[in-house]
Image 1 (cartoon, helix red, strand yellow):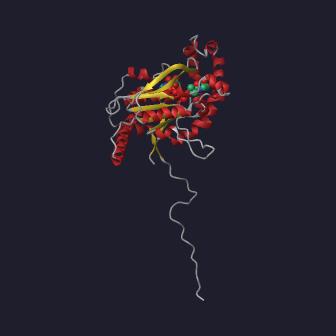
Image 2 (cartoon, helix red, strand yellow):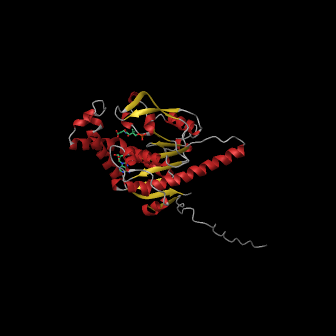
Image 3 (cartoon, helix red, strand yellow):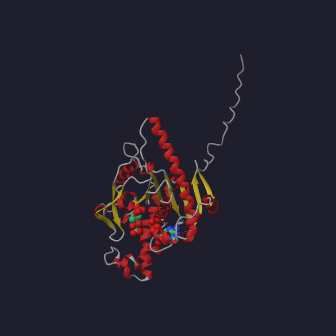
Length: 330
Ligand SMILES: Nc1ncnc2c1ncn2[C@@H]1O[C@H](COP(=O)(O)OP(=O)(O)O)[C@@H](O)[C@H]1O
Ligand SMILES: CC(C)(COP(=O)(O)O)[C@@H](O)C(=O)NCCC(=O)O
């Protein structure tokens, strides 16, 4: 009888199944990133910078030159490349080319500097010849009104995914992306701490739409029938996550609260007018309490887990200076 000898199969080539996956990101130092500016002249004056920053804080000019200008250069390349992709798709389909806005999401914690980043990017992108019309919306406009939140026990959950009209937000971005003219969004007021009845912001076929908010990179939730929903980031061509250590974020939140006490809260119409009379210690305690009850749990549970979905992560150290940049390349 013939003897059958069985040789053990050679191990499959490639890494062990348990080996870590390659990182989709390239990590750049601030210096390496700044060099990517490639002699692009700075097109913002100190007055322009002052205009785009919140609460009277100035964004350092070097910061704009070394971090945000190279980012706007990369974005200008992406805008051109994405327009090229649309052209080949419409050619393939035999359709007439239509103008499609380039959509950028800006995510991160409360107080990390999302609004400031988004406003600086808007000013820089407006200066590139292919993107003169840049619109910016913040997702707080899609928070449910206080009365609705209160009736569902969600007033202490402002900023959590369930506190937003997610369908309304998705429809808004989908409409803008598909070229619908004059798409309107509701408006939130930090003064009244509520949606402003009847107010709206209208977005009319811009070259670029920046969508800034805590939860813009939220993944799809699975429905009971196991189908997944569309999500906002399906409509993003690029996304930025602004990151900083949690302790630092708490400090920025409390500092901003102390400044608001002297500015916005001092207004008798402010929802938080009662905070204007707090002493420094009381204000620190109140702000720390809001941070610990609402903003930090939301950061840890809902916002931070979305960081790895961003195209680019800007990591900040103290003074809001960007210390490192991660760019998705896979
Ligand atoms: N790049 C920056 N340089 C200096 N200050 C900044 C910078 N980014 C944000 N800030 C300040 O930090 C605070 C929080 O920024 P903001 O953009 O309002 O945060 P968010 O929109 O994430 O809540 C504000 O007082 C703002 O002026
Ligand atoms: C309005 C916010 C939910 C941020 O909303 P976003 O624009 O990121 O959608 C947040 O700034 C906020 O007010 N949070 C409630 C707790 C607090 O007062 O800090």
